[in-house]
Image (tube, helix red, strand yellow):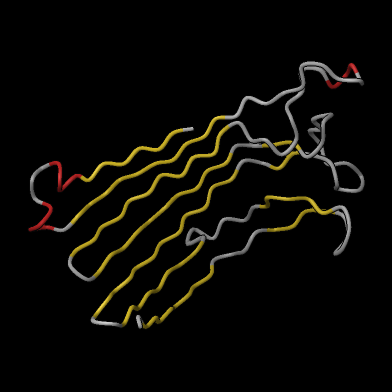
Amino acid sequence: ESFFEIDFFNLAGRSTKWGNLVFYTSAAYVNAFYTKAYLKDLEGNRMEFAPAWNIRPGLNYRYKKISTSIQLSYVTKQYTDAKNTEKDAATSVSGVVPSYYVCDWSVNYAVKKLQMGAGINNFTNNIYFTRRAVSYPGPGIIPAEPRTFYVSLGVKF
C-alpha cells in the first residue's frame, strides 16, 4: 500500500502567487490466494472480495477561498466465491465482479463563516457493480449509483 503527493506550484516556488496544484495517488496491491484448503480444488485460487489493485489518483487545485478536486477510483476484478467462478452462477450469487472505475469532481468556496460546495459523483456515468446480493432484494448484483449531483451549504460556529 502506498500514498504519494506532490504540490507542483510549491515545488516550482509559485504556491502563494498561483495557489496550490496537488497531485496525489493512493494505491494498494493485494496478492491474496488460498495456499492450503480443506477442498484441494481451492488451493491456488484468489481470495474472494480481494481485488489485486485498488488505485485512487486525484488532482486538487486551491486558490485563496476556492478549491476544486477530481478523483479517479479504479478497482481490478474480484471473485465473490472461493472457487473463482468466472461465469455467473444460475442464482447470480457467485461470479466475477468486473474491474471498474469511477470519476468524481467537486468544487468548494469559503467566505467568512459560510462554506459552499457542489460536485458530481460518477461524472462519466459508468455502469458497474461492486457487490452481489444473496438475499433481499433477491439474489443478483447490486448496481452502483449512476451520475449524481450534490450541492452543500455549511456554516461555521
